[in-house]
Image (cartoon, rainbow, N blue to C red):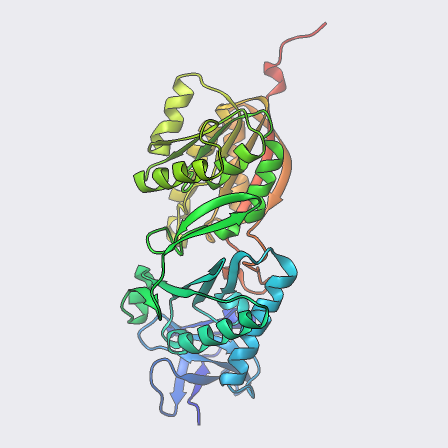
Length: 406
């Protein structure tokens, strides 16, 4: 018999909105025996049954819900059903040659990410309860992919994020099962990449920008382009494949620049697309001081905030880079900017861009507003699943600065 967790009166606001988390300070009592990672039944203060999830006393996120149906047993059949649903959804919405197959709470498998790079899986497990189910989930996924003729040659674990320590878990990195070459070649939007699943950021590549990169490709023909915070060169290479006249990508990481340069050669773009090691926060003001301007400026910074407490500081950072970026765009040119921080919500990010445009004396004509690719689904009743905001504008000088015409 599963332990029963009862919430305090007035608490449980997150799961009542449809979210998946219950925090430590929301719990009134726990009846029954359990171990950390076990499945428990959740009741509201008045006994109303709210569903089932796994518990961990070592985490501030005390319970992560796996079903809103209190009668649903969290057993092997249910887990396989969730995995199959996740894969069938991806087949409907995205090119699955390389994609995110499981996206945590958005696939009702909280704390788990699985990315597929051609015939390799990379897994990130961030919660104790899901960690206990991890091998079963992966076995199910390998079996389900095989049904579609996809033979997985290896699985690599990238559960090396610091946040695991908040769950009482050690960081873990390495092969699950047989060893294999961890440098994997993928193709996305016609662009070839080497993905380093062992040493690359996160799981090796940022799959969430797939369709946003394609939007860049369509606008780049004949343009001079700079791609800031380029990482392994993905936006820059899409611009190059789209026929850009010249592209320069900047990143602070020597490793990223080396990987991006290798990717340029892989696509035969080494003469058009170049990369330079630079701290973008210093490079952007330097280019402004030099009076440089470009047809297309792309900003893809890392998350400037990972908590609500640092939103104001993050807003200043976003404002500074967007102000510089806009100053570097030629009159009538294009500007792409994004935020991958969940806490920098759409309203705040839009305000920052508007303030930057005003300070730069620029007028913006919106071309695209996009979010993360659909293999990173957004649940409208769970704010945590929505994090990426991506915009493309045509940029004009304020009309009061235009030359007077007859």
